[in-house]
Length: 233
Ligand code: CA
Image 1 (cartoon, helix red, strand yellow):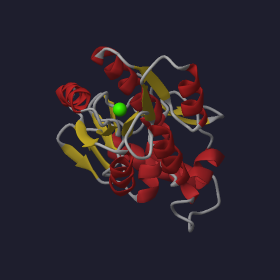
Image 2 (cartoon, protein in one colour; image 1 turned 30 degrees about the vertical axis):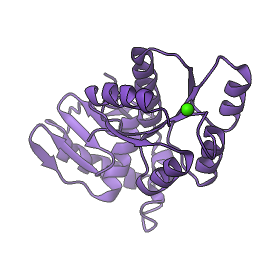
Image 3 (spheres, rainbow, N blue to C red; image 1 turned 30 degrees about the horizontal axis):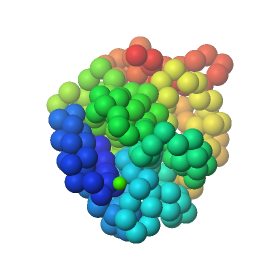
Image 4 (cartoon, protein in one colour; image 1 turned 180 degrees about the horizontal axis):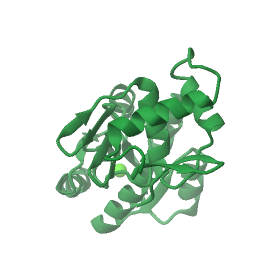
């Protein structure tokens, strides 16, 4: 359930310090000592977030970032720049970095940036350490494993139900019209009935499975005349 973070950093002492701090927060950490190694790992293992040093032996951090994005990776990237060089920041952000920190930085600062990036990338309710897990009260939605549970109870959903829940829960309070939900889940099930009312049927099944009282839902709310929204914390 824990987010996996790839750290691309050639300086041993720096890498170990960051690794330790990340592990203390519950993250799984992989260290790459060069840009090439980092790229290999990033393409094979799809980490949830990448901490990328700019100054590396061989291909530098900018080139790693450029190739990562070219390969379609959307993982948030936090760049570590050696000096307070405006140029580095500009290049990094232009290449698709999500944030940067200038060395030397405090580990506390690094942790708070990482948490913010994970939240931004994987939803407001994303577990601070889990990244891809949405929690609301006793409801747990594991986006990676596509598992849903309430407390100890596993809840079995169809692919369409899961997709509807995933979209709603990723942005609590945001109202989705039936038309919009239909468009969003159609990618998953091309055979889906084109009628917007089909969404009502899926939502009512979802509620039967999730809610204590499907007629007084606590998770998936009806917004009259507009559509559905996931409850805000
Ligand atoms: Ca370095």
